[in-house]
Length: 210
Image (cartoon, rainbow, N blue to C red; front, top):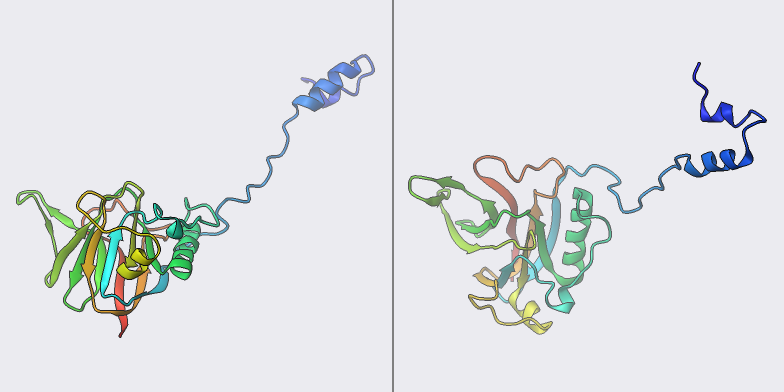
């Protein structure tokens, strides 16, 4: 029978040096990582934001302005962390945040006044996106930071923001002034961003006009 390191260290002829060496090399339990996912998140993120100016700034990252530079509490590699982060953005800065990966989605408007963040199906023959009936393109987002963020124009400008231009990645979307509900589907750990065909990430809907 092949002796184990534990049995060898019990023999008197094995030196204390060898026993100490084994204790040093013996694998140690890995510490728990407090920055890990605590549970699977399979729901939707739902928050409310005010858009009193009737104009929305749309981009991938508002954090270039310090007021909107909000750090996550937990790892955003998991749905739970993304859900918590989006709620922080809404609570502290009235920002609608959705993690969408490096998908460069479109924002479309519908006849009912809602906005949808979507990777539409694509017509290869016509070389164009396929939109639904009653749907129109209102913005395209370059996702260098893997997110879509929306904020009221006056809120943005009054906290150090700058005017949108074709070169700074900011778009302006006209909407009905009021209170909106922001629902994000893509924060679920089961959401497939790279699924074939049309993929909807999030939706903004008017709750109450003002």
